[in-house]
Image (cartoon, rainbow, N blue to C red; front, top):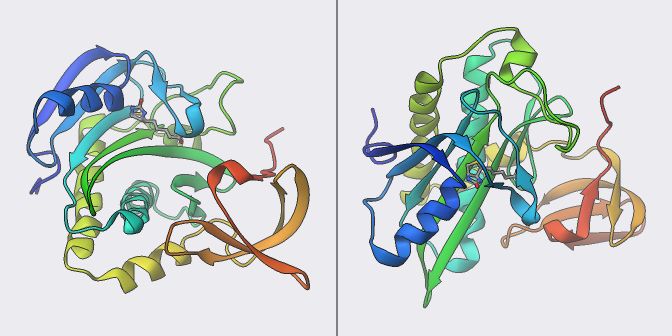
Length: 255
Ligand code: BTN
């Protein structure tokens, strides 16, 4: 049921970055909403914060799609992060039945236990008081069996389950799950989105160590504010609200 997302799929065997391709395309044309660009081999994948996204050719999903969420004010753009993360966590859960610990690590990584299985890079274009377009780029580690040391705590669905997954089926289901949450957002059902997001948030309400503006703090995540900043409480001290650049999570590293 590819209603909007995935109605048109552009497959390009080798590409530097599916997000970069879309950003270029949007300077010339307006591809139909939901159009997907997918590649088997991404040679210069972009992660958040300027990091590179590593993916072994032909093993994983690396794709982007475009949305035109004109109904959304720029200061509500974090809802796009939320709906994509919810869709992706639904997807991973549906393919890994019995796996309890599938979480959203703020802002929109998908974690299984303490390991990252998927990342999303959303690039928004703002025009006046609305979001003109959003390019949503997704990297989901599916069948890759080993990662180079450069990537931070990666894992794949195959490493977790021992099983090989069909990438076309995975893509079809991914967009179905994301579209479900995008529909709720279009209908303005933000409360359900907020509750589901917090309910799946990695380390929500748990005390843990973080590096905040250069020093280690012990704090617990208590929410996400309306701008999408992470809200943490240092018990007995203060509440802090921070952007991605200001906080790092001391995730336990695998042996
Ligand atoms: C992150 O976790 O840092 C975000 C990773 C996003 C990677 C995907 S792969 C497809 C799309 N094209 C890119 O260049 N990046 C995104």
